[in-house]
Image 1 (cartoon, rainbow, N blue to C red):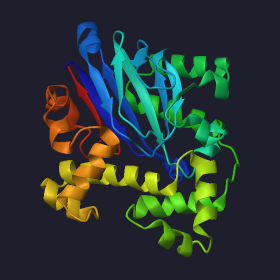
Image 2: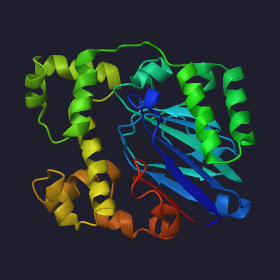
Image 3: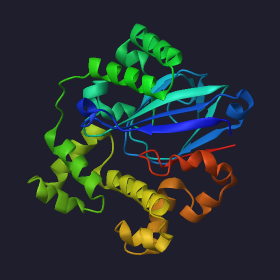
Length: 284
């Protein structure tokens, strides 16, 4: 595939809000139109700014061609396909801090696409898109997107119980809800209500999604077998891991990774293996 993929850590002023920034590009029109991006469930809201041709998404809420969108926590598998030469900058936000960027109720973003113009204004997004298109290389694009984010940073402090719970679950997704509630000195009911209000899903489902990401990282970054990865990620055994993965993705991990759409382009995926975008796969 004629393209590149580069992952960047955010600069210090954004480190508490942004998990990673990804710039990828497929310049050849034919290769881009044949490409398919498969994204697994993820706890991280994402801002997508395309300086190439629009992308098509089969997301249940907001399925269509788009250029600039925000997506929230994702509970299922979504497929994307470029309509032509592709270029995009993706910003993966930390869920417990995303509201300081988007300035809106995070539940409205869960499993859906929201047009960035509706959040930041058409003029702002048009200027950002042109800046990315005119930039000479990934470093310049990352600088442009970070300048944009810092300009729109809000002093928006949401429910401390929910944000602290999300932070703890990202560190230990296997933590039982009753233990999490005890750690935060609240009832399970209060925790669930606060978490649902903040993120649109409950803490148990959030932890399941985080743990699937941990599983993929253990498998791809550390080269562990499925059984070893299951143990390392806190599953009771490999069967438990398979059931959890199948419940979220629809197929077992072995079936998913054997699929031709995932295996077709290992070279392009290789640069994602050590990134926070390692649950996204490109194929042709």
